[in-house]
Length: 261
DNA sequence: ATGACGGTGTGGCACCGA
Image (tube, rainbow, N blue to C red; front, side):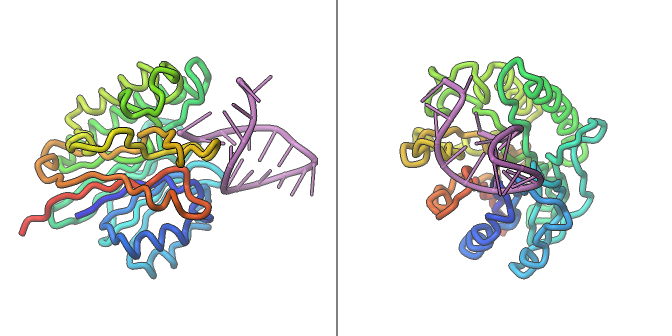
């Protein structure tokens, strides 16, 4: 059982890469962020032809999330209930798996621009609301995965320049405390359950040869609830798609869960 | 360094991302 998160930075542009990637890496669930298209433009036929069901929540130009799955998703929730939000950032759904029902919450977390900005305040309020939502979801769904583009580098080792970027966006104490608060709900960062190469990142700036110089951040995460933790066999970042022509600035991250025999 | 690169929508650029 494999579940992937991938910020594609425009599904219209990246659809061929997503389909190519799925052909070689047929994961069970693929969660996408930054679709940048309205729902009427979602390439449902192409996704279905590739053998996937899809639920999606998009808007024109910005944001947008989707959940592709081998089996149909149900009990779909768009955004955080109770939070007034113009932006399409969350899609949650239940999928069946060999492990039983699995609740998946796919988020495109707020960027936040810079500490002190209005967008940063929105990020903090959004994170606060998300925390309450995830807590409620966990009470209903013991087997839960929270994944997506968190726009938070949780620790110094998740940044190419932790000293130079200290207390800048993605690196602030406040953002990191929010990440820890999510862990405190009983979630576990699947990537850090394993020994990983130093300087493992999931995003690299398009500018200044960021990828070639490995100037990146680890901001795409897959958190799993306690009942799932013993089943996690691997979590890895696939850098290959970042080497494509016209790549997304993010790489896909995949968690592998053991299936009962 | 208020830059860079890339996507979108619009329009001869501005805005946004991270």
